[in-house]
Image (cartoon, rainbow, N blue to C red; front, side):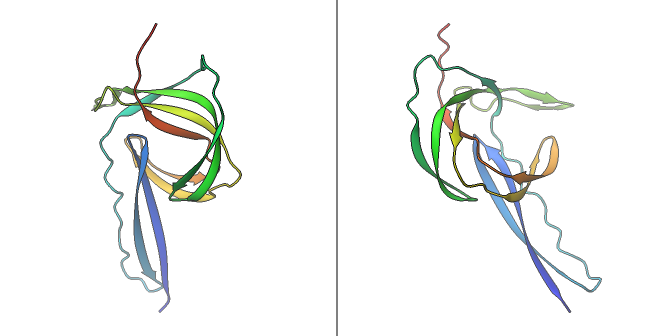
Length: 149
């Protein structure tokens, strides 16, 4: 009897940070039932609407070292690309309220030389999707915001 083991990875976003769950599935060549793996629960948190922005000040590019589930890399942070505000989202009969109105994301354009080249399965209120993951493009930081005009 031949055994095949696979690992499935699921991701979800919580306050701009990814949470991940892995499950191991073992199947045989014989017609036996396989282990069904449920998607991890969708975390509670703000939904965000992101806006393209232009900085009033000059940004000094800098290198930072980042580690995530796909590895460790050094990236060049080039400047702010987006501001993401918490948003109340209504879809069908479901409403996702704002969890914390103070919590925003500011995303910075980044450049680096290594690609992730991974596949992941994500689940959210719009359903599940399998994604091919390539180059990181932005680093989003938790931020506060004040409207000045």
